Image (cartoon, rainbow over the protein chains, first blue to last red):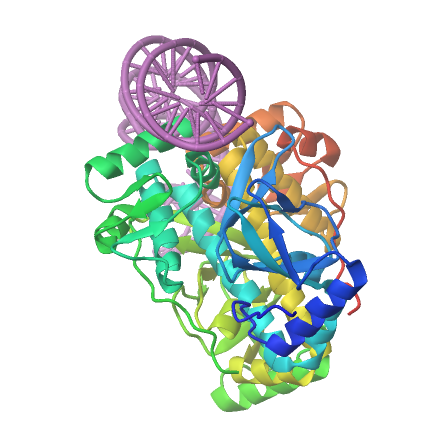
Amino acid sequence: MVTDCKACPLRRHEIFQKMTREETEKTQRFKSGELAVDPGTPILAEGSNAPQIYTALRGMGLRYKVLSNGRRQVVNFIFPGDFIGLQAGLIGEMGHSVEASTHMTLCVFDRKDFYDFFRNSTERAFDVTWLAASQEHFLGEALTTVGQRSAIAGVAWALVQLFRKGDALNMVQNDTMPLPFKQQDLADALGLSLVHTNKTLARLRERQLASWSEGKLVIHDVEQLADVAGMELEEMRVRPVI
Amino acid sequence: MVTDCKACPLRRHEIFQKMTREETEKTQRFKSGELAVDPGTPILAEGSNAPQIYTALRGMGLRYKVLSNGRRQVVNFIFPGDFIGLQAGLIGEMGHSVEASTHMTLCVFDRKDFYDFFRNSTERAFDVTWLAASQEHFLGEALTTVGQRSAIAGVAWALVQLFRKGDALNMVQNDTMPLPFKQQDLADALGLSLVHTNKTLARLRERQLASWSEGKLVIHDVEQLADVAGMELEEMRVRPVI
DNA sequence: CGAGACTTTGAGCCACCTCAAGAAAAGTGG
DNA sequence: CCACTTTTCTTGAGGTGGCTCAAAGTCTCG
């Protein structure tokens, strides 16, 4: 049986299904073009030249880099629908590692097919490029946060981003969404220590701006939180028609 | 007369020349498809939906974002050959501002033509995507630096990056290259204060690792500096053949 | 019930910040 | 070419936001 890739950002089901079917036949390992991984499982390693590319279907994960001194920078949080390994597919090598934070199921396809796919449809090629550019845009924002915002503004910024992304994916109900990460993950994303991140989260909780515990993030007034972050809420971009 | 766009990263001269010629006719403003700007001139503004895209032919500049509180994050340094406005071309809006640090001359073409260009050649479409992905890769590195490296390691990292990029462009002679930026620019790139950046540069100079003054950066032993930065020197990536 | 993983809190410290002011360059106009 | 102004660089002094160390509290799970 072939996986339904509705969740793939490129929405080209027939292509993805073909890829995953081939993948299945080739490796004899994936029952249905899906790959299921447990929390903590590394999916891609920095510097690797992995032949696979994935789309997250369910579950969440982290992109991160680690320095030789052991410090870790979380580059991004992965949500359902996100692409994993685009960099490897494009420039031939991963610039970061990826691992699962929760149980995840991934849609698998391989690089060679990715090239064909890119070549055969300018429409889809544009989508891929759009995705890369969006990611670049996001990283610019993140860099600005880490470089210029105070701890409380940075944490507020991150929570707003996560909440809005969750909202776009219909994960928010009653002002709350699942956020299955550790405080250490957020700390590493913001370049803060765990201790200070914890204290900053406590401050936001006291001020009734945001409360994150037991894997649930609750935000009643996003605008107020965005205000603390010193950011304007830009509306979600939609891929333009080329 | 039509500009020679050898320096454009996409090397598709006939296209670019056509674009710039059209541009010239349309605006009656650019004598030869080139645009010359003075130091300090804003080229693109964050949030703008500019119809133009550029390639830097000569001179250097800065990409940056400014926060509502007035703080500025320098996102990247622009060298000859770099693309300017790719984001606007792809996702319809600039995520950062761009301004010239030196006198610059730019190769101008417009967005509509960019779309056609993208659509009409999968080869070039791939190049664009590759560029976007490379930029994403770089930003991930920068984020890691700002988030996880100490001031001295961060400054060392930045100088190594600049020096290697200059080297790739044959701007290095006798271990020295032109670096026409201000210390404030570097400080804003690394999320450090001007004062601390200055003192850190002084330390590197004392330790004979790197010396930057009067617009010239001198590095005798890049590996030693990379060591201070705690980075491995990865070799320059070349766009793979698709 | 004990072990391990995560969160919370307290206490002291330091890397980097801000404020301030002088020195050196780099324009600018006559 | 020289006074004058403005910008950039440099250095000192003192302050603080966020860090590290340490330990206790909570939760999960075998």
